[in-house]
Image (cartoon, rainbow, N blue to C red; front, side):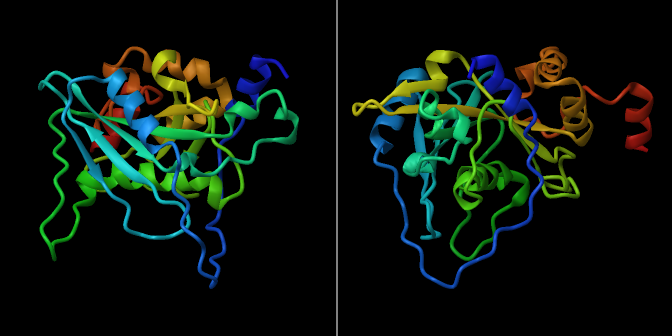
Length: 254
């Protein structure tokens, strides 16, 4: 299978789904053996940043910790990345084996503007969804292929439910996410045992953008997004919708 065919397979994948059936049996918690190597790779790609870790305390199936490399200046961005998705191999299409088996292991990256303050609430206080939805999204998508016995790769898009519910009704109308990639030297690396870890960057989308991607393709959507700050990869909750014309946009604000 050629690389072009892989991208076409990914582009066609917009995951509409129902929640998986829960099992009453206690499932073992899987922890990635590549944690230190992932952290070393990310620190090499984004050096001289303060790093914090939000540990996953769910103790369910796959442990997905969220690391944050803080923005060094107000003009920069925070880098969040998962450590845990690579604990298990994703189930690729049978036609991908054995040539593209290296796509089995992945982690995820999200970029937040420097002014986005992620501080854990004091004991007894609730988390603010307006601040924490990117963290929840990273953990949800990191577990997604393992819960659904599937895979995620470049160009795959996952709406936030069948109804395209916004990630936070108070601050944004973004309601789905596409997997994209940063520079090649960031988006993949080999571990000491030869396993390839693919690091996909989350690109949050509006419903109209998802519809455009399904009709015109991923490359066409990326071309539209290239004209906005951060190419859509930085999580600006109120960024322009590149697939809504001005008249529709004005009507939506009323």
